[in-house]
Amino acid sequence: MRDAGGRFEGDESQLVLMGRIVGAFGLQGWLKIKAFTEEPRGLGEFPRWLVGARGDWREMPLEDFEVHSKGPVAKLAGCDDREGADGLRGRDVAVTRAELGEPDDGTMYWVDLVGLEVVDEGGIILGTVEALFETGETSVMVVRESAAGAERMIPFVAQYVKSVDREARRITVEWKADYDA
Image 1: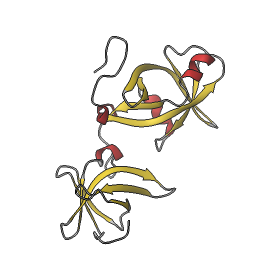
Image 2: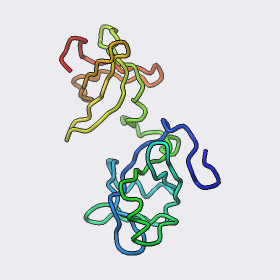
Image 3: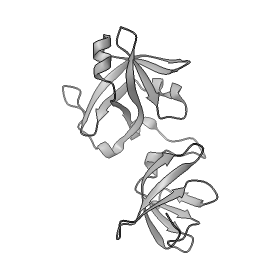
């Protein structure tokens, strides 16, 4: 999955975006991280990070990790000074889906929802989950119809999402095809 130079050569659809490098922290190669995880401290549990952007990911071992009052900071192998840290600014941080393990009971990873078919309670196919995003307190599914390409935004809350069957790759919602997106 990784070449001799540490470049990731696997299936990018199996990468889970965990954060973004927003700048240097100090003079010795530490990085300020914007975490995309519910608990930023969890980033420190992964011994290797994939750092990069679409089509250009490089594996970098995590040497140290701390959460400060203004957010997480990390020290990656091979990043030894402020110039090196500045060179990584704007790069994403990811891990493979396999490294996440199984979610706790009653929870799920967004990456596991992408690609699932979405149907209303009558069985009418509304589309496929293309992405999810946060709007403050609510997660929203971006559901795209395959035929017409229409896009729906469906809040991922119990009021609308009635069931998620990962084995059947289907999400059942209380939502009608003619609702405004």
